[in-house]
Amino acid sequence: MGKKCIWVDEAWDKSLRKTLRNTARIGARFPHASKGGVYELASPEWWTAGFWPGMLWQLYGASGREELKALAEECELAMDAVLDGFVRLDHDLGFMWTLTSVANYKLTGNETSRIRAMKAANYLAGRFNLKGRYIRAWNPWHEGERNEGVAIIDCCMNMPLLFWASRTSGDPRYAQIAEEHMNTVLQHFIRPDGSVYHIIQFNPETGEMLEPLGGQGYGPESAWSRGSAWAIYGLTLAYHHTGKAEYLTAAQRTATFFLSRLPEDQVPAWDFRAPQELRSLRDSSAGACAASGLLLLAQMTGGEDGDFYRTRGEQMLKSLYERYGAWDDPEEEGLLLHGTSNYPQGTNIDVPLIYGDFYFVEGLARLKGYGPFYWE
Ligand code: GLY
Image 1 (cartoon, protein in one colour):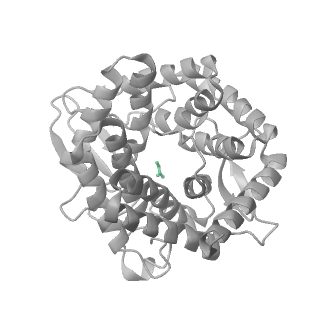
Image 2 (cartoon, rainbow, N blue to C red; image 1 turned 90 degrees about the horizontal axis):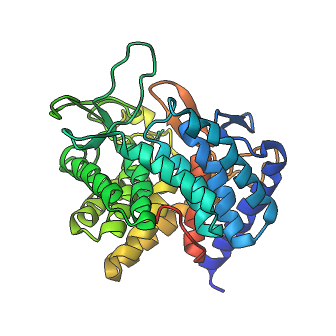
């Protein structure tokens, strides 16, 4: 066994052990950010609800530990009230039900899960704006807010639910909507240098693109690293599902930008264009998500490009394991330290984030050759 395999095996074993330990306290609930070593629990309505069960499914798929499967199933059931309640659902239906019901269906063939995921896909497709060719992101956050015209880069990762729905049902409508949304991403979200906008405001009546808005990055013209990670991975998945070369080209452009901005330790600043004094603050979740996406991009490209993306994705995961892991701290539930959720709002800064942990485990599963991967 080469050196490389040793660190991957160690990282996998430690992730499995820590997650098994965490199940005792977290159970079938919904962790988001770890504070003082303890994961705070979020509502099952929050966009992060799928990541804990998704990680349990990923670890179950490879280890066969039944207790992980049982908890993932319980989480999925607990989310039914959100799906049936409808009013709190937004575009993150994709993140939420891909990592729960699609995962369950792929691993066990559970028909009830397939139907749940189809309901989620139908609600997601229903958010498509015909004139602007985008999926509406959010619902009003407060009384009177109008955000029918808002689309965000994160939604790239919600599109796999629509591609899956077309495959499982034989009805091309879902994939057609996903492609239209991704075409809008190509047209309006990706800058010439391969960086991306977080939020674009459209006129929801005419579909006209109005302006980029500041979001979780430093400003409208900055380069929020998790946004870049969503784009790299989401565009690669769009190529995987459609075979259309323009998505692959765009994935490579966003990857080139991201990789060229990494510091020496290979883990991105929370925003590549934040003022220098703020760039020491990292986002390990962006690193983990981009790394897993790069490993898929490596598979999609093959050849020399494939070797390059695989090497870079592997280097990022290795650095996360060696320099950002909380392996030796029994008082810390998070797997990865130093995630940044929302700097402009001042929330969950420099903490473990459940989606960082999820993508780290998923990236390791790719290196170990374990599947399936639920977005695919
Ligand atoms: N999708 C929200 C975020 O990336 O924080």
